[in-house]
Amino acid sequence: MAIVRFLIDMGLFIGQSKAFFGLLHGLATATDAVTREICAEWAFCAENSGDV
Image: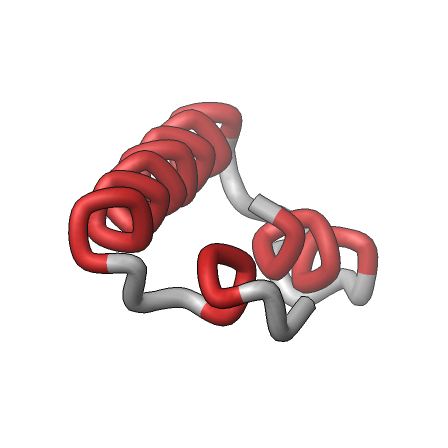
């Protein structure tokens, strides 16, 4: 979600509809959930290896 917030704050999506932002939010939320699941299952991410 952080990258989506950054891009919105930078004005990249000026003029987009509420439906677009709803879709973007849903995609970002789903992506975050899948990333966390993969990291937890495979210890694939830096946050799970203690490198953060």
